[in-house]
Image 1 (cartoon, helix red, strand yellow):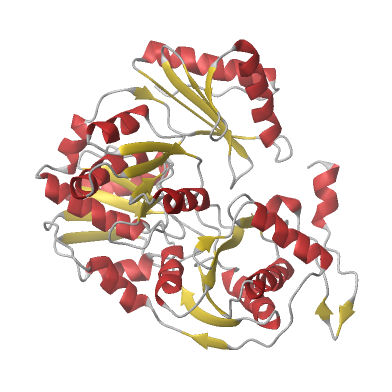
Image 2: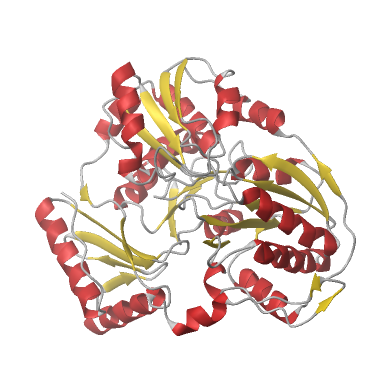
Amino acid sequence: MDCFVTAFLAMTIPETANGQMMSHQFNRTILREYDVRGIVGQTLDADDAYALGRSYAALATAEGAKKVAVGRDGRTHSPEMEASLIRGLTEGGLDVVRVGMGPSPLLYFAVATLDVQGGIQVTGSHNPADYNGFKMLLNGRSVFGAEIQDLGRRAAEGDWSDGRGEIEDADVVDAYVDALVKGFDGKPYRIGWDAGNGAAGPILEKLLQRLPGEHHTLYTEVDGRFPNHHPDPTVEANLADLKKLVADKQLDFGFAFDGDADRIGAVDSEGRVIWGDQLLIILAAPVLKELPGATIIADVKASQTLFDRIAEMGGTPLMWKTGHSLIKAKMKETQAPLAGEMSGHIFFKHQWYGFDDAMYAAIRTIRAVSASRKSLTELKSEMPVSVATPELRFQVDEARKFAVIDEVAARLAAEGANVNSTDGVRVNTADGWWLLRGSNTQDVLVARAEAKDQAGLDRLMATVNEQLQKSGIAAVEAAH
């Protein structure tokens, strides 16, 4: 770890009054593009949660907010983080409605349906068990980007509001499940479900009692240590147990969720993964039938096949930056009814609230497959064949992450390459396209490439590797 980052690991509490923290310096690495996230005991602790509560309260009260909802995921340290966060919020003058342990979409639902002006979910999302963090909403928007950096400034300067907020509890689980199944018109299928020991488990069990069909579940007991597999369904290895369940029980398809159930993974009856952009093709069909010409948003990691297919179905495809907060903001700007990411975040404004919700995405997938009068396996088989890598992730020092992207972009510009710089660099060539971008949630670079054939993919990945090596980064291998 470089000395600059090390210097930020120490918290500074210059002065106190009546035992209360007067200012706080966050480790700079936890202030991400669209949430706050770090490793508990190293870059994030309960004092950070308190300071974030105070800083958020100052921002919220300045905008006239009086009450916010707070939820937490199932990680072992989330109760402590939640308690410190709420203490900061109330001492900053906000009333708090606790909605308890559950997935991030439950908190989003609470914010959409209760008399509150914002909300914070304590969650480490899809990251390993030692991570935690905070996803924030305020006055109908996500708090992200420059606003998160400003929360860091408020904490460092002690630019906080003061007050005595009150705390109440609200149980919105039944209302959420009611909303999930409202208008359900899908056929009864035989489905496997993997909650991954994440926060969705108990709600999933309730939901499946309401859904027609035959359902088989894995790991619905919440365990923040994630003893069975890592809680990220976008990594194919983490879908092994779901694939086995589908095969053993000869099910129609299966779904998996990440740690806070805002990412969905899916497999068909043959165990083939339905990636996020492929799901979006299936989900967009009934939406565009009802809303011809509508804008459908996907992130820069999505296949060109998706953008072409949206246009063929009469929609308006829009490529945008990766990140749930960034996508939500673009949806609001463009009035898009549907958006999605390769990472399995699916956002429905059509018949829903506009937030990313893996359980709702699963419900809509069942409905879309049913409406197609085909099986999910048939829909997968009909998709145009291209050769593509999965998301290739590799470690890079946090301080170097975005600098590498800048270096690659400068070299590509000098070469006159055909580059889309919406998010990182997405380079179009005669063989297809390749992407290199810095992750906003982990200290990794993400590469992806897609071509018409393996020879083209190999050429694309050779170019990626060449660019990485020029910046001193170890090469990645193309997937065959």
